[in-house]
Length: 563
Length: 48
Image 1 (tube, each protein chain N blue to C red):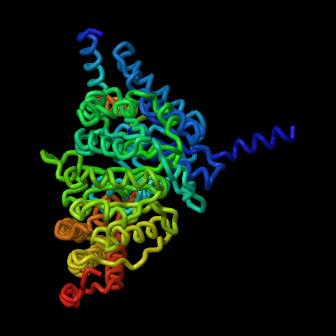
Image 2 (image 1 turned 180 degrees about the vertical axis):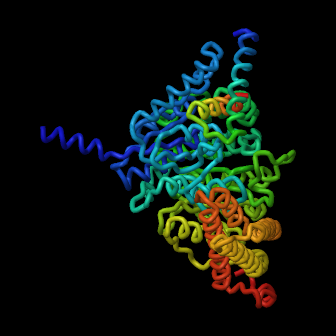
Image 3 (image 1 turned 60 degrees about the vertical axis):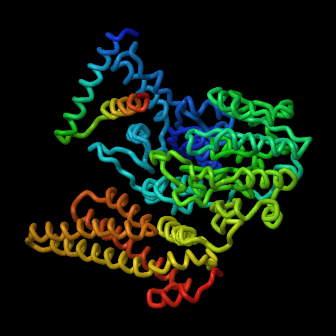
């Protein structure tokens, strides 16, 4: 009896959280990595995953390892002509009932689509993190990390965080422990390569001819090597184009197609004898669960910092092209970023990784011409003091202005949202970086002044409201001033895009102000301007520490070398 | 399924959706059923 009571009380104390991830397989895998972090640090929490059936099923073997329960949504089947509108609504409602079958302490929407936002509204949880619609059909994002995610990911390339770390931050993981490990899974000498040369967008993948060169050169240089090429059935034509080249005719018996194979088969096949080479894709995330040695070639829309596979000591090759990374709807007839990543560089890197688990940059510089290295960045995945995944630039120890600002933003967001401080070392700056940064103290000052004006007019509104007989016209006038300030913030970031994450975040935060009346809403607006003001001060101070000050900019740029 | 059934589904769906829109215009609070319909609408949009 006593034992039974104890079991009951344990059952009562178990907290369930529900995570909505309705996007594709790669996103589910990144979510799974974040939940691994949660489980290591909070094993007592039970986690329910809500995902679309077609994306969850292929990786059920990973989901089962990480989550306590998976609800596979099947909206395609639920909505059908036979059941009619009423029946379809009933079908969807019954799937939602399964999600709500037990008390949910917190629901977390990580997918940011309209469908997931509606679904989130239907989940009966005590706390909601990530977007949902309230009863008035207003989209609401209450937590700061989700507001940040919404404002930054797939915008520019100033987000310093890997998506897994962002997801973990939204979930609220304090990373005292991490599953990231420096212990190598792969053998030093490997005799198999798995290539995944395909991607969801043409922008994100090399033309077949480049992959033909990679396959040819690797097979030619190593008689023991077998190359497996993975893809879906839909990639068959591209695979045939890639392997039809006469230069590969001698090597056919060492090229193994893995098209349309179940992911579980591919996952089981790839062991410590393998090197993985591919574009940023679901497979790279899948193999990060085993820490297979990998080389990711990132092109087009891929933001390396956000989507690098979540494992340590792996490598990313990306272009230095000005327009990289672009956006899915950016029109591009000639993929300059593809041309800027020569296959020679990828081949030289792969050859080294096949005989060693790390790259020797001196050797690489000997093997590859300067011409082929000048147009690329090569990164190695590592972590900082907070356990956040970072990319270390191996080719250039001098940081660019963007890299410097990414570091600044890591400190600003980590501290503002979680009160944790990443350690950043004072960077060495390239000449171009010094030049680009030279105008930023002034820009940070302008941002600070605008934020202070925002605070001032918010305060005026609060003061006016607190009067015995508030003057409505005055309140309106102050509101007009605040609108003007917001417009000027937009103008400012057009001239100084390095500051755009602060303004983008403030916009999302302002559209999600907490409060139910004008006083509370104005107070919240005041605090948003306060955050802008604090962020701009931090940037100003950081620039000062790099000796980039408003007054000695000219001296700085003319006297400083590339050091 | 015939195109006729498709039309009936579409008509009934649009009627229900318009009812939700009218509710929103009247600034009425949405119910779970309304949200389920909106979820369905969004899912159909995604399916093209």
